[in-house]
Image (cartoon, rainbow, N blue to C red; front, side):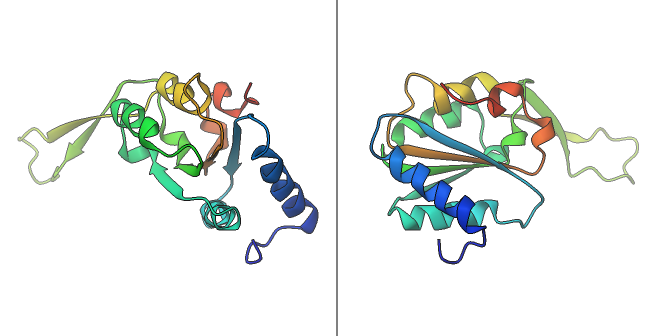
Length: 157
């Protein structure tokens, strides 16, 4: 944490909170938001190093519900999970995107790919549900906190 630039009071409070976390059986999660390049992910890596935790980085824009639900039971109980781009979740089940569309081919239909996004219910289950293990630190990051569902920004419990 010596390479993380935070005011000392905030840094001390964060480290104390995590130190306390490893004693009781309370799930611990953080939501970090801000502009790109403000240190959200690098601070997570630094925290993992400070507490000797393996870090698992999950980009929610590249995984679907099934992948997320299959991934979390495989993670060790004591680790740090970094869920990047938490705003990539959706209440919609699928997103249709055009692949290889060329505006010169006006008469031909674009190739389409249907890609499911992580939906809110499975996400809440893995981060705060019955199966959420003790000893796992969860950090979620977003550049757009205003896009998040209220269920993601409320205190856990």
